[in-house]
Image 1 (cartoon, rainbow, N blue to C red):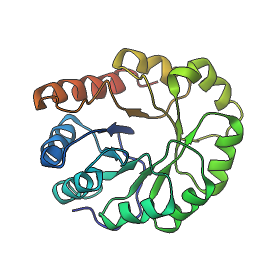
Image 2 (cartoon, rainbow, N blue to C red):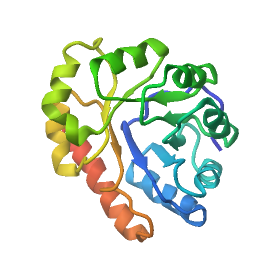
Image 3 (cartoon, rainbow, N blue to C red):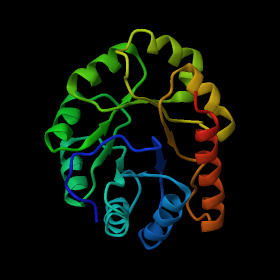
Length: 210
C-alpha cells in the first residue's frame, strides 16, 4: 500500500488513464502497467466503480506509485480519493479552490488548462503539473507558444490524442510528461494488448529523450 510521504513527480512522467476500468480487473491491469514501466495510474471518476478500482490498485502497488483519480470536479471528490488511499488528483479544468484543497491534503494535483490565464491561475493555486487539455486542439505549436511565457521548469503534460509516434514532436515543443488514455487503455481489452500498448509508450518516451 502507498505510504503517506509527500508525492513527487513520477518517473517516467507518464500517467496511465484507465477510464472504464472494472474493479475486478484493477489489480491485474495495474500490475501489467507497473511491469511495463509506468509509475502513475489514474482512474477517472466519471465511470462506475472508479473509487473501488482506486482502492484495489492502492492495495496492490509498491510504495511511491502515484495512484489517483481523474475528472475530479470538487473538494468532496478530493476527500473521497484521499480516503481511498490515493495521492493523485487530475482535473479536466482549472478550479483554484479544488487545487488548493488538494494541496492542503498533501496530494499531487494536475489541473486541466488550455490558456495562459488558466495556466497562471493553476500555478498560483499550487498545481504541481499542468494538464494541457485537449492537447489535440492545442497542438504542438500552441504548447511551444505557451511554454515561452510560463516559469522555467513548469511541468507540462499534454493529454488527448497522444500516440507513441507523436511523443517526440510534443517533447520538442516542451512537453515534460503525458497523460495517456484511449491509445493506451480501452475497457475490456486483454492484458496482453495492454502490455503491448504500455511498452510502446514507455519505449517511445525513452527514445524521444531530448
